Image (cartoon, rainbow, N blue to C red; front, top):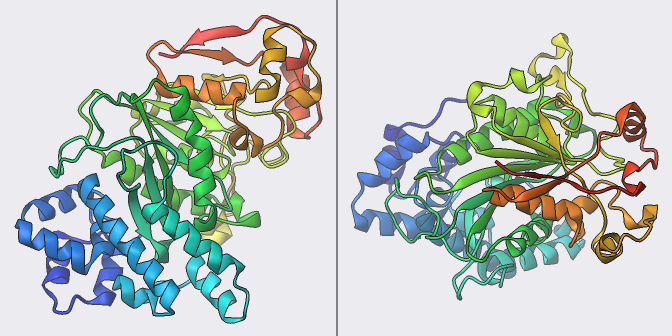
Length: 445
C-alpha cells in the first residue's frame, strides 16, 4: 500500500506557487491520517484557511480531519467549478486544479461518450452535480446547501451527510453533529454504485430519517471510491481497498459520547462494511442489508476484533437473485497474489450471533397485515434492490429502529430451518412469512 502523506507533504504542497497539480493528486491519492490533518490545519492562520478554500477546494473538501463545516464549503466550490466547466466545455481538471483528474474515472468515461455524440449521461451528470450543489435534497435544512463531505471525481468519491443540520464549529476536534442528534447511520451501497446513481441512494435511505423522531437522526451516504461492476463484485481486494477508506473516514469523526453510529452495508457494501469492521472500524451497531457477507475471511463474529463485536443485524428478503448464490464464499487463489481473494465471508443471515430481522411486507400490504388478512407472495418484499427502493416496508421500519436504538423495537425473522436456507440459496419462492403468526419483537440495545 502507498505510504500516507505527511505533515511535510502538506506543507510543501501549499507552499508551491502555483500549487502543483501533480503534488495535489499525490496527496489526495495517499491522504495523511486524520490526526496529521488536524495538526496541520490547526497550525495554519485563518487567512491561509481562506486562501486554500479558494485555491484548492479539492484538497480541503476531501481530507479526513478537516471540520465538516469547512469541507462542505470546499466541496460546494468544487461542484460549482465542475458544473461551470461542463457547461462551458472547459477542462474540468484545470477547474479543480488536479492533474490527471479523471484517469479511469466515471466522469472521464462519460465525457468520452459525449465526444462521440452520446450526450444522455453527460446531461444526467450535469443534473446530478447541480442537485448536489444547490438542490433541495431530501430533508429540510433551513435553506442551507447540501452537506457534501467529499467530492473527488478522479477517485469516483462522493459522500453526503443527509440531515437537517451539522455543527458550524470549525474546531477539528469538535463533534460535527448538530445539537439534539443522537443517532447517525453510515450507509455503504453495493456494486455498480456510480455518481450518476448517487441521488437515488440518498433518497431511498432518507426514509429512515422520516421514520425517526424529528431532529434526532442523521445519515452519511458513503460512496468514497470506485465500486466494482459485474463479476468484479466478487473481488475481496476491491472490497478491502474501499473498507480501508471507509474505516478511515468513520474513525476520523470526532465523537463526544452522545451520538451512536450504525453502519448499514448493502450487497457488496455489506462485504465492505464487514471488512472495515475486521480492520478496526468503530461503530455501535452494524446492519447487513441484502449483504454479500460479513467480510472476506470472516467465518463467525469471533473472527472480528473485540472492538467490532457490537450488535449485528441482518435483513435478507426471499428470492434475492444477487447474493443468494455467493453467500459464504471465502476463496484464495495464491498464484494470483492479493488479487486472488474472492468472496465476502460468512452469510450474515445465518451466522450465530447476528440477529436476523424480518423484511416482511410492502407498504401497500401493511394495513392488510395489521388486519390479519391472508397474505400472498405479491404482498411480500422480495428480491434484492427492492429492500432499498420500496418505501413503507417492514424492512425499512426495522432499519429505522436499529438506527435509533435506545429500546426501539425490531421484528425478528422466524427461524425457518434448513428448507428456507436452501430456498434462499437457489432463489426459490419459499416464504415462511406467509404463515399466520404473531410478530416476535425485540428491543434494540
